[in-house]
Image (cartoon, rainbow, N blue to C red; front, side):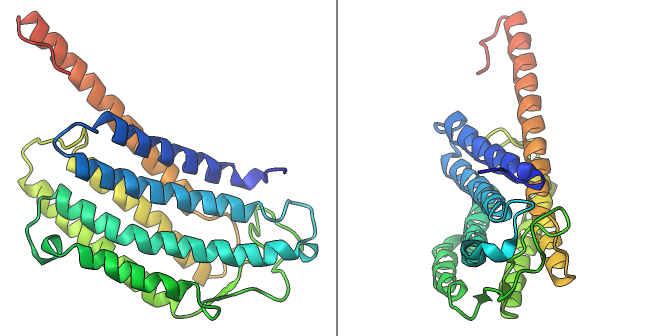
Length: 264
């Protein structure tokens, strides 16, 4: 199977986010913030899965091949769109759970976070209704390209707007909670990340999804911008990890020079 040139960033984003999720699980599996760490890794895994779904969707029709002759792609594209909505729905309670634990909230949501998972589970079957996403009778373009990455992009029900509104509410709540936590944070680092880094990563991720939704409503047919934002967010995390290692090394040598115990 040939890989379309406009999909390499999708694959890179999927691999990077999955690798980062695995790193956080392995690196901080014995720390005091194990649950927070696992939730953050689960969120990164959702981002990875979303990028990989886009990668597969963008490669269903090889560039130059007539899309009309690929009826399998016609139905697989619809299935992958529904799968991506499912990933987005399930990512919302994971993100909320992560935020309330990271910010050490004791509010109503924190005490009843299980309901967020229940709502997500109840909403998921709606995405798989035949009326939610309908396969097109004819492709949008002759073949896939930088101008039209997914010729068989299905027609999504206007009810998808309700999912977008719920998702936006989660993002607003997340940013308010992190902003308040940062105001009271006194240089504390949890599982190796400052709150400012976590907030920036979530903002970049959310920005990519917002662009995807806006582009879809405006009739944009090119490559999905979310994997690009995932790559940028992954780069921010890599820089933060490297910076944390440098700081720990400097502190370790400082303590050794002063006759103290080395820092892990």
